Structure formats: structure tokens, C-alpha cells
Image (cartoon, rainbow, N blue to C red; front, top):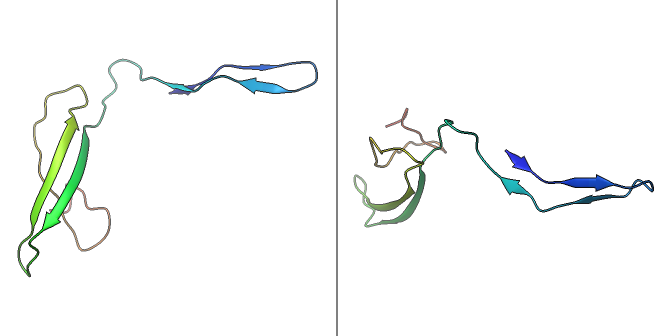
Length: 78
């Protein structure tokens, strides 16, 4: 959730506080991952590096790379 306080006065002017973000308990949080480099590209191979900077609060069960010939590949592709 994103929350910020507000107040409106009798001239209908509204002021807002700083936004804060929080999650309720027991909601799954996705791991944070970054694709870093791709080098040595040939017709059949590529060298990839990536980083998992957060496990989302749960143990990781898989990690790797996904690919497709269309944008936004997921684990449903390959």
C-alpha cells in the first residue's frame, strides 16, 4: 500500500504529507533481480550475468535466465 496524510482547510486548499509504502503481513513479495551483462554473442550462445539482490523474504528455489523471441520472457517461455 502507498499512504500519505492530507488536510484540507476551509478555503479548500489541500496539503499532503510524504508518501510511505508498506506491505501487510503474509503477502508474497517477488525477489529483486537484475540482468547485468550479455557478452560473447554467437549464433547459438551468449554469456549472461545477473544478480539476486533480495529473496523477497523467502528461500529461493530457482534462479536463472529466461529467453524468447518476443519481449518480456517469463518462465513460461524457456
